[in-house]
Length: 128
Image 1 (tube, rainbow, N blue to C red):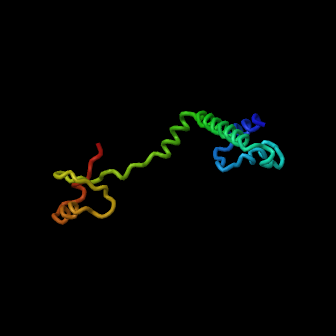
Image 2 (cartoon, rainbow, N blue to C red):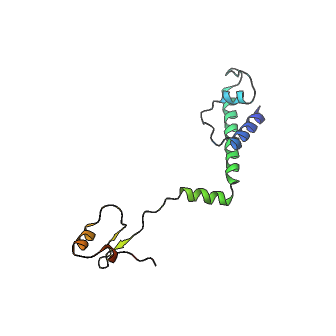
Image 3 (cartoon, helix red, strand yellow):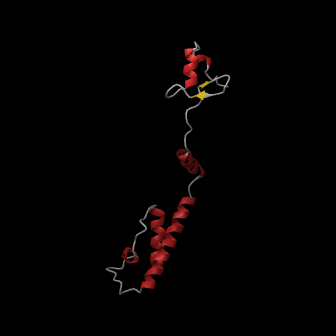
């Protein structure tokens, strides 16, 4: 029976990436083919050992499946998770160095310079 439990844990660990962790030890016996298991049929410490063997095999199989990912898959997954940066700087004050992305409300320094007669194109950041 122990071999069946370990084989089941290995199979489920490699096939189903997310098995709910609330499986009871008696359910493990059912999954192994024991019909209508009853707590009196197996001692509690035996159920605990079977559950421990199952989860050890399950997580070992999951680790083996995860380590078989190719490097390209890992890079693709990490690139998908990577946080994207905010908008770049489009306008910079030549004297103070203050910046504005061009989104949202105009900052006070832009409004003051525009009222003084300057244009937005004078503050544009030139791409290098």
